Length: 416
Ligand SMILES: *[C@@H]1O[C@H](CO)[C@@H](O)[C@H](O)[C@H]1NC(C)=O
Ligand SMILES: *[C@@H]1O[C@H](CO)[C@@H](O)[C@H](O)[C@H]1NC(C)=O
Image (cartoon, rainbow, N blue to C red; front, side, top):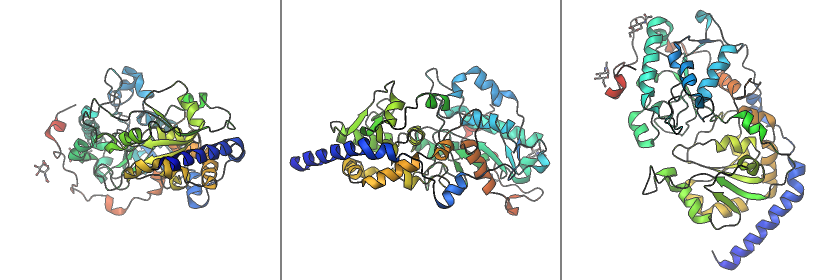
């Protein structure tokens, strides 16, 4: 770009931000209700619309693992633990499996962390197979549908493909024994082997107490235009670059590291949450997976999420109007990010901020303890309720089999 135009553009931007933060934004961050069906869905109450039976599995599949490593309560996959706890106390729970619409199998497959806290899913397939075998032998509900009225929380990077690298995840595919079940997972990308039709895409877990402890007054000016903290390259796992984030994060860094409108860095400051509340736009680029906790943080902190992840399927997309609250930028358009963001009209920015200020939307992104109406737990239940009644065709005839118990990589067949 011509240098003179660039300077002019910068000047215009400062003017725009100055204006926004000084007057409009603080006055207009009043909440606006989401109109139409999305708003209704967001406010649905699932109680009375479904009954869930929670299998009582040996503690080695769930609670014992958390006792061994309490970090499983705070990492971004902790939804598998909290959903279980929530269901045990929920009014939708039934202790009579004969009247259940849905069966929940509580297996904490991501609660297996390396010493430095990385959840690796290498043992997950065997653990999952072991739990399903147990459920199928001890109760007779699994065999009726071979899992079609059962649901699982599989929050790892690529869900039930159980690998953190995309190519390997694609090679593995969804664990064969889960092919008829409903998967509740963070991973969501259109036309991807690791996203089964009918899955429920959820937000990653972000610790609610920690988030609420960092809330600053809502009238604080948003003086940062674009904010991002995180990796641009993953040299350890992708030394040549290009695989990680399909090059999108590297492109953000290379194009905008010296641009004064962009507050981007790998350093995670203590004021990270506060800084998001002082920002107009928060970048949410893909990493190894298309999503990251930034998505949740941006919504909760009222910072317009700039979603850079082609074909991403976002959490609770039938309830949250992502197109209206966020900005979508194609991965190949990252070099034009500055012009794209500075050319969004002020009214559009203000409307997105008003929608983001809606407390029901923030609620839907979190898994608070205790639970609240409309939170992510309730949105999951709403998703399950909307899939009822089950189609008659999911019930197998006597002796009929749909799953292949010996399919998949041989390593997965070893006992757990
Ligand atoms: C369900 O089917 C499997 C084999 O497919 C069998 O081993 C198991 O005993 C059956 N479960 C019940 C409760 O009958
Ligand atoms: C089940 O999968 C195994 C391993 O892929 C395969 O050898 C076998 O033929 C399959 N069985 C059926 C009935 O499709």
